[in-house]
Length: 217
Image (cartoon, rainbow, N blue to C red; front, side):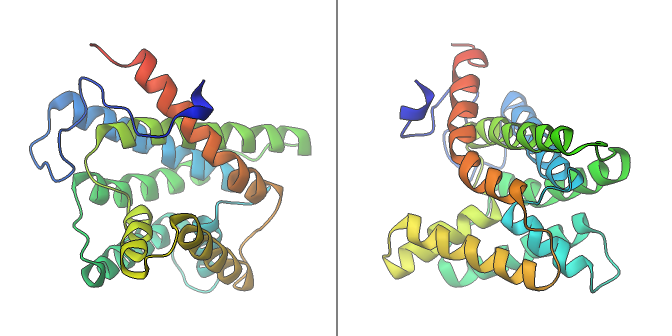
């Protein structure tokens, strides 16, 4: 089943190469749709008040010390991470830039218009839904193949430079970010754990769903 997926599937609307600046309309549309779902999931996790994803914990922590929204801070963090790519020989694609813009926008939109559920079990349910949305959004965005997200590019770039296992590099980044965000006042809770342990299977499920139901071959 979906947990056995080892590679990102290719479908009829997948871009043949990441650095494609004239993608098909369908490829571009599915990319934007996936990033919208991803950003909505990130935003709902924050709204649930059960915690946040590691990078959102950092953005939330920084927002407590500067007069900027979490979404705008997320955008600036993404730009800073993309800037670091210069030293890692990474090249951004359309998906990289839209990742920074759309996810940041959707986080602020979710915070502005979605209310926190009144009881803890509903908050937990919202957190679970948010992780599933991030997974499904990742399925569309990854299969579109229009460039890695800022954080994914940082991870792969560091792995190439250090020759360390990718799991170790990703783990170091996520742990460092969440500790920094927590120190600055960001919320770490059960939602953070749900994201940490659930996002992998959720992304695999998202890839399976997109490959099976959104492939016109």
